[in-house]
Structures are given as structure tokens and as C-alpha cells.
Amino acid sequence: MSEKAIELADVANDKGIEYFLISYVDLFGALRSKLVPASAIAGMQKNGAGFAGFATYLDSSPADPDLLSVPDASSLIQLPWQKEVGWLAGDLVMDGKSYTQGPRNQLKAQVEKAAALGYRMKSGVECEYFLLSPDGRSVADTLDVAEKPCYDQSAVMRQYDLIKEICDCMLELGWGPYQNDHEDANGQFEMNWDYNDCIVTADQHVFFKFMVKTLAEKRGMRATFMPKPFNHLTGNGCHCHVSLWDTTGTKNLFEDPNGELGMSEKAYSFLAGVLDSAEGLCALFNPTVNSFKRINAPITASGATWAPNSVTYTGNNRTHMIRIPDTGRFEFRLADGAVNPYLLQASLLMAGLDGMEHQRDPGKRHDIDMYKEGHTLKDVRKLPLNLLDALRLLDKSEVIRKGFGDDFVNSYVKLRMQNWNDFMSHPSEWEKRDCMDC
Image 1 (spheres, rainbow, N blue to C red):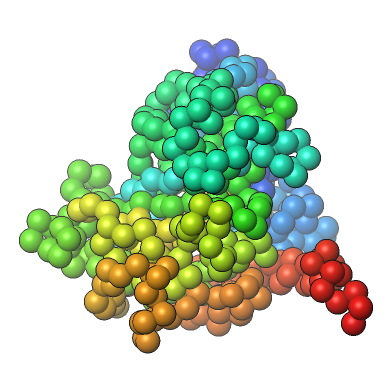
Image 2 (cartoon, rainbow, N blue to C red; image 1 turned 90 degrees about the horizontal axis):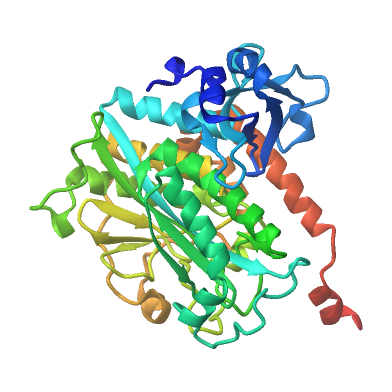
């Protein structure tokens, strides 16, 4: 059913929904919402819920007009654990115009551009998270201390009630969850569900984070998608599997049985576009100061970081930024748990379309172990070492400015630069130890 054909007031009556959360995600990935009674949803569906953009992470001022989040009725998710509440993703509007800083608006613009060219991107995400004590200082499960805890059956079963509830919710919602596991760090988990159109995946990604945090909190735990909560443990990645289809969604344009690794020329041009803009997009894929403690990390307690630090691609090899694990898709391994779900998808699609437009060449793939042999490659570009470097690369990228617009890039760089300056104004405990006697 199309979005316009869905009358939310009728849906509320049919499904017993008493309240709606009309939401949007700001530039920093924070989920913002207003709780609206079902009696008012018809007006909200038409006109949107009003917000003061300046009060969130958007480049706005107190003098600006109301920021309206117009709910996308097709995104409706009825909370499985609180069925009288429905969640809605919204598209931001100001002064009757699409708000260019809106992350979902940016994704929709890329989706529309792809559709005009005859393309439709599908994707799936692998969301890693930690379950911690309420203060966030330690792993919630005090028995989870194995040196190599990945796929630890006992650790999974000790969190069975929570994992089952989350997975049951996804089953009820029709997401097609298919596996849950304990990841490479103590206290770390991952849950996988089916791929979908990229905007659906982004909406689900936003809701998944909200759901995990909410249900963990009910059990006295704190769930976090922070990229690197503990220096000695593997960080939270957010790997994304990408494929490009025709507009009907029935033909995978990345798949070619005669192509190298079963991938078409379109696939390699798309992939090359992502490689070409990787350093500039790093500030979007890895958006926090903490992010760069994951992609430039020393070896962890388990023996590997599982995160890239170079701009390379490969076959079925987990030590590179992009791997091709199967025909017809690639896995992008750079993004971390702090990534804005909409900007993750928008960035991959924007860069991929640029690669196809300019018929970019990814060059020869590398099949070596980058952790052990990466230093032997002389012509490989390195990813930024910190958020400041990443922001400077984003700021000067002509491809990204063309793809997202100057307004968006300027606003994002401005706000994140303020974030960096705030970080620099706070001496850390390490600095105090290092230089107390200077």
C-alpha cells in the first residue's frame, strides 16, 4: 500500500494504537520524537509535528521557523512490547520546503536520483552492541570474561531472555531475523535480519537501536552502540551489505556469472565510487571522536580488531574495508555503531552512483591479510587518524558537496567541528597521568 493511501487514523482504530511517536533523526544520529494521541494523528499526518531544530543537533537557530516532521505512514511500526504505541519515521520540512539537513531527506533524495537512472539499492546491516552495567563502566555479565568470547554459547544463553525478546519482536514485525550471536568482545552481541530496500533498512536500523536500548533498560542493563567502549576489546562495527537492482527489484544488477567473483562491471564501478570517496565520507561513517579508536586500534584481547584502516577491497577476506563474500553484493566494513543510519545508506548510494557515472575503476583487489602484510603495500591510501582530519577531508570533497549539497556539508562540518573543539577542551585522565610532572 502506498504511503498516501494509508490513513493513520484508520490504522490506529484497526490496530488499537492509542499514541504515535512521530520521529526524526538529527545530524548526530539522535532519535527525536513527539508523542501524539491517536485523536490528533490525522492533522499530524497532513501537517507534521513541530520541533525547534536548534534544540537538537541541527545547524539551526532559535529564530528559525518550526521544523516539521511529516510522518511517513509506510514506515509505521507498532511497538511489539507496547502495542498501544506506534512509531513513525518523519521527513523534515521547514517553510514548506524539504529540510536539506534532514538525514532521511538526504537518503530519499539519493533514492530518487537512483530511481531516475533505473536503479534501486538494497542493503542489510549488521548491528553490534554491548550490554553493560547501568553506569556503563563494565560488562553486565560478570561471567563473560573469556579471552576469545566470540560465539560463546554460554554467554549467549545467559542473556537468552533479552535476546529472545528482541528476536521475537523482529519476527512479529516481519523483518526476517535469522541469527543472533555473541561477538568478539566480552559483553558484545550482534543480531541479523533480512536485507531490504535501503530506506526500509535505514528505518529498521533506527528502530532496532531504540528497541535494543529500551528492552535492555527494562532488565537493568545499558545497551550501547558506542564504537569503542573499552580500549582492550573489539569495538562496535556496523557492516553494510550492498546490492543494486533494477527499479522493479527483481534483477540484481551487481550479479554477473561471467564477471570476476560473480560481480558485474556496474558493481565494480559502484564499488570504485565508494573507494574513491572513502576518506571524505569517513566523517559520516565514523562520526565521533571515539570512532577513531576503533579503526586505528591496536590488537585487542581476542587477537584482532576486525576494523579496517586502509582503503582497499578484496574477495572473501575480513581484513579489508570492502569484501566480496558472495556473488551480487559487497560488504562495507568501515562504518561503526555510531553511524547515522540514514547517512550510512545515503553515503554509500551517493558514492556508488558517482562511481557509475564516471565509470571509476577500483583497481586490482588485494587478497593479503592486511593486519599482517598491509605494510607491504606501497600505493594504498590510509583512512584518517582522527575526527579532525576526517572533517577536513569531508569539507574539501567536491564529490560529496555535489552529492549532498553545500548546505548539508557545511552544517555537518560546523557541528562536528564544535564537537571536536569541545573534546579538545577537556583533558583526559591519560593526559593527566602522562604530563602531571611536566
